Length: 469
Image 1 (tube, rainbow, N blue to C red):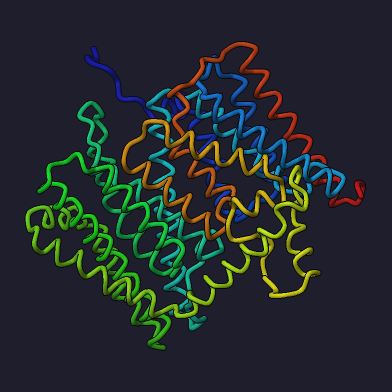
Image 2 (cartoon, helix red, strand yellow):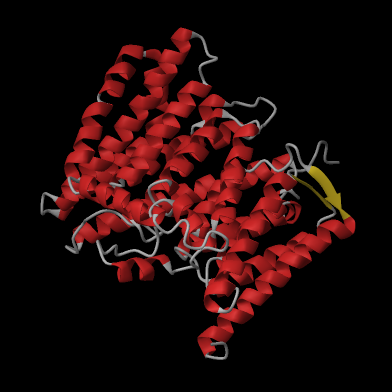
C-alpha cells in the first residue's frame, strides 16, 4: 500500500495548468518575433480563446479589461479612418493583450504564480542565449557591438531584462513558508540574476539603465518599512549585486568590442557562469559584511560612468528624442478624435521638413498614441497606469512596472507584444477588485476576442494577397 499523496508527474502538471502553458508559449512566441506578426499573433490569440472557452469562471478587474478593449477598439477605428481597414495598424497585434489578461483572470493563485515564475525563467534563458551569441560572434570575428539579443533590438532587450531582474528580487523581499517550492525557485532565480545583469550591460541601453534606476528608487521607497539598519543593509546588498553583475558585463563588452581579441571573452563568460553557481554565496557574504556591500554599492558610480563613457552618442540620441517629442506635440490637435492614423506621423513629419527621424515611432509612447490614435486612446493608457498604482502590489512588482513605464516615456517597448505581455503578466493582478464572471458572460467575451483575432487574420492575409486595397 502506498501511503501519502503520490507525487504528480509531468503529464499531471500539464493537465492541471494547461492554460498556464498556453499563455507561456504565446509569450515565448511573441518575444521571438520582435514587434510581432499579425498572423502569428492572431493564431496565438485564437488558441488562447479556445482555452478560455473551457474555463468555468474568471475573477477579472473590469476597470483594466474594459479600457484595454476600448484602447484596441479606438486603435482599429483609427486604422479604418486612415487606411480603410481595421488591421493595418497595431490592433491586430495588441488585441492579444486583453486576451492574455482575461485568461490570467481564469487562473487560481498557484497557476498565476507558476506563470510568472516561468516567464522570469524565460527572461533568463533569453539573457543566456544573448550572452552565448555575443561571445560566439566575438570568437568568429564578426564584430561585437551592442547586444540585440533574441528580441533583435538592444533597447527592447534592455527593458525586458530589467523587468526580469526586478522579478528575481522577490526571492529576498518575499519568502513564503507555505510554498514548499520556494527554496527551489530561490536557487533558480539566484542563478539567473548575474546572467540577466551581464546581458543587460551588453545592451548598453541608456534608457533601460535610467528606467532601472527609477525602479530601484521605487523598490527602496517601498521597502522603507524595514528597520533603519536593515533597510540600509538591503539597499547596499541590492546595489552591490547590480554593480557587480553589470560591471562584469561591461568588462565582457570591453573584451569583445575594444580588445580586438575575441578569446578574451572566454574567461569572462566562464566567470559569469561561476557567478551563476555561487551567487547565493555572494548574497550571504554581502549580508554578513555590510561594509563590503557598501563599498561595492559605491562602486556603482564607477560602473555607471563606464557605461556612459562607452556610449558618448547617448546624449545626442537623447536630444534627438526630445526633438521627436516636440514634433509629436505639434500634431496633437491635428486629429484629436482618431489621430492622424497608424504609421502616418513619420510620413507627415517628413513632408513638413526639419530633422529626419529614422523611426516609425515617437520615442514617447503616450505622445505617439495621442498623435496616431487620438487623445481618447492615450487617456485609456493613462487610466491603466493609474489603476495599477491604486492596486496593492509587492515592492518588486511596483519597481518592475515603474521601470517599464519610465522606459516607454523615452522609447517604444510598448509596441513589442512580447515585452508588454511580460509586463502585463508580472503586474497584472486581475483577482484584486475583480468581478466574478462565469457561464455565458465569460464565453461571450472569449468569443468576441476570438472573432476579432479571426478578422485580423483574414484581413492581413487578404492584404498580403492583394484582395483588399
